[in-house]
Image (cartoon, rainbow, N blue to C red; front, side, top):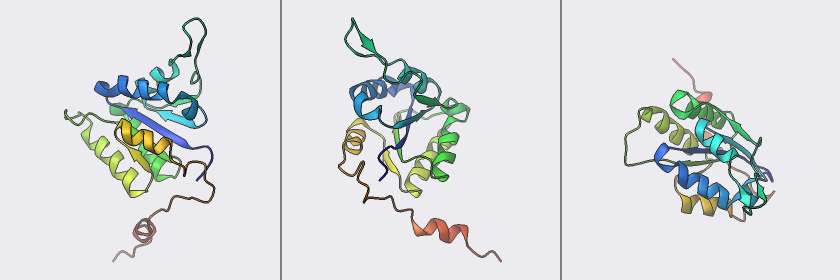
Length: 158
């Protein structure tokens, strides 16, 4: 696996605080990677302060590529990046208790993460396990893109 990953971060409104807390807790590890986030989530990540109250540090200021807000196309932008092989890991703290107005986009994003076999977490525990995996930075490990993708792309139409 690559030493520096492209990690997409997404959170529904009811779980944004949880994601921001998780990012702050893992700031040292995450700051080594390229981060992409949907609208407000990206803004909030850029404002995370670490260190002391007297000497705060802002490890993500200017280091998060902000995309559109999820309902305005940000989910689809991340989905396209997954399909293009530009995202290695998706951390998506989604609210499974409420139907989203852009539920089709949410479902499509989850489907693409699974289809393209990228590391994908929808909760804090799984995100912690992914981020601390010994396979991160292991040059001998590489993600395997399923054969069905090439087979589908090269199918014969009648």
